[in-house]
Image 1 (tube, rainbow, N blue to C red):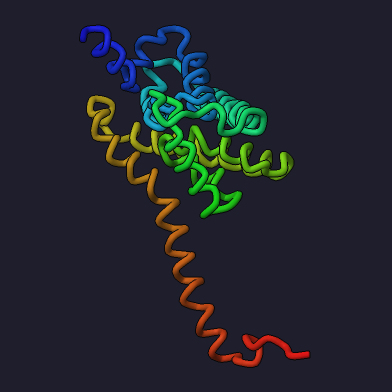
Image 2 (tube, rainbow, N blue to C red; image 1 turned 180 degrees about the horizontal axis):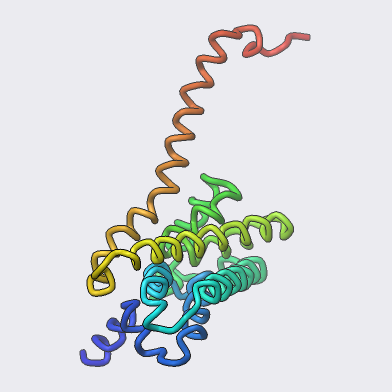
Length: 224
């Protein structure tokens, strides 16, 4: 039980940052890299980036360094995930596996199928999906050139937004002593892109019938 408690404690961002000590930048890069596509989704990527930005002065870390390391690590992690999906596909996953469960890949595949390539951006903000979405892209044999574009875009959007949130919160007096309260904000950030995409899809879906009603001739197929 003590071993499990110790392991779970390291899932906390503040504990991880403290454990990294002088190697904090390298530690952040490794965590982001692993969580981005190396098939281990149970790491606090979001909260680690936010917390590191909040505590950047205490950690003696430059915000530009945080951004650079986070973005590069996120891009490289997705590259590995894409390769694993393209090379091995669904063979890596089993129904009764402890980590590489088939249901995790299925969730990512459904997310990818629903949102298309933009899922590589939206998926960045969704825990677990973030890890397996590049694998799903590789399994679906998404063209590599397209994957790279969306991969880089998603990495920049995710790391930049998490660090900006941390910088903003870090300027609020006393926030560094209330790290646990940040989790609610992170959850909100995680679902916001999906909510926006859902609203846009619903708006488009309701608009199309109106357009068809105004142009009935365009909706009817041509007869030969």
